[in-house]
Image (cartoon, rainbow, N blue to C red; front, side, top):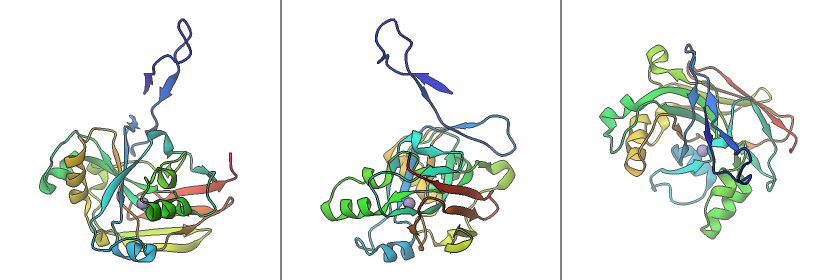
Length: 240
Ligand code: MN
């Protein structure tokens, strides 16, 4: 799906076209056109502890990545402006129905399915933002910072509310936890977010990462597994 943008090329010239990235939906012919990418910050206690930033009693919160940060080909170039480029393995919720001010007990009705994603982070820039009280964009919301696998629809795979997560780098396990350790579970995340924004079909929610985050460099190969979802494979590439 594509959308015409304001014509910055000038009158009489073809308007630029903004491509809307899409995820494959397992078992369906139609794709999942992505509208917004929301992320949950601080949703696993052991990750809050390893970060050593802020108060661990503070509740989780939301931030966004630009939609065109989505990576569907598994290739993530080393970004500019960092010497501490880190992975965060996360369960991703795909929204299939609009919703606002949802209660947790009705929130799952808005979920189309689930995917495996990585919230790639410029950790050095994120830590600077913490210390200076500045926005997180430079640490979180940069080009190609959101690799994501296909959406597994609820009708075939059920809701993913329990089970293992594991991230390997070059075959060695770096993150290993269970979804049950989320501070906000999936219905609570969807309900909370729907109070702040009207959820729409095409929205993705990255639900936070467990402990074990670390740095990667070009040539590293990451494999993310979450329960019965297809394994996400990502390679870190040289800078563009
Ligand atoms: Mn994250």
